[in-house]
Length: 490
Image (cartoon, rainbow, N blue to C red):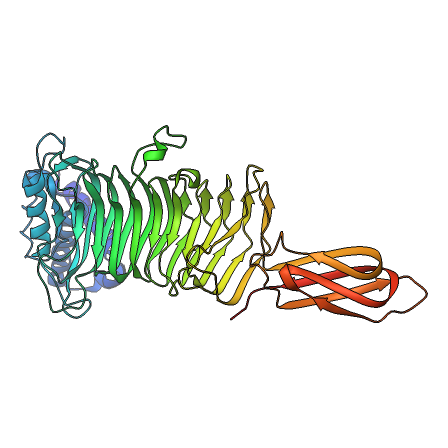
């Protein structure tokens, strides 16, 4: 190539390079006319910087190949979530071999894993340690128990536990009772059991929560228990939700229903909640012997009342403080001993299911049974009944049974309205078929309407036997309208 041509090509290349400098470097580059005025040395320095810039940008823009990427540096202890996959401990996910010891090793490692700070005083924070069952079915021969009290923020999830044929009959598959004590007043705090199926193999119970705080049992299926599906004792704020419990796996109409036994949920503590739970077979659906518990969206079709079963049993005389709302009692009802501060509302009772108030010490105070639906079989069953076999109710206060709609059963209430028409001096309205408590009318409101020529004097004369008697001083044709209330007596 001739020297003139070579100089021309070099000029073109240098011009293009100058344009690239302006475009790539943007605001950090010199304007083109300033570059032309720069000295040759300065200009060459800019070219070197431009080449270095292009090389660096190419390195950043191009993903490294697998062969050239460095090996990941080991993470320091405690810098990643503490996840314990049970198969790495030798647990058999097929359910053929006993996995008890492997599962207990995983639990022990989680318990002894990294922790930071405390929850309640004396309960160390495990930071969300997670024991994963990996969708397996694990055979166990003894309860899975944390090695000691004093830990929290731990989760067990994602698989099935099956009791072996030699599992202790008084044990629970997951046992949150403390094998040793701690400085805390509670054993555990914020333990979560989620997405589990527990097959008790008729050898004991499913889950026990003893003296623990803020425990969650979520989306669990517990079957084949012989004692309790879930036992909650002492402590408080155990939340059981979105779960299914049944001693026998059935969907109703089971030929062996008469022989159902055990209790699906036993609440022997305070401030707990059972929400959106189905109990499909057990002698007692929910037993409550602790204060201030809430049951919402619970569907009980366990052992029918006709076979001796109970949907919800409130066994806490004089300290009930229970709210039952939006529940479904399906051929099995509610029993409350000496109820005090009890609300049952917006619930559905099917198949002659009813509410029984049972006198132990003769107390019934602060009861609201309102806005429920009852559907029966036209056998004359009363929607609310009294069991006074151990003595009558002697102290009754603020009891309201009202605004319930009834089909195929007999209405019972503490508020009633009636009327009678006649020509004479006496009118009687009999409320005994409707009023809940015998001979306990304590408020009457009435009006007398007469079309006769004479204006009579009239008065309330008698309320005994839940009958209201109105009398006038002269005989007149009249209609009498009466509203009565019960609800207090001592």
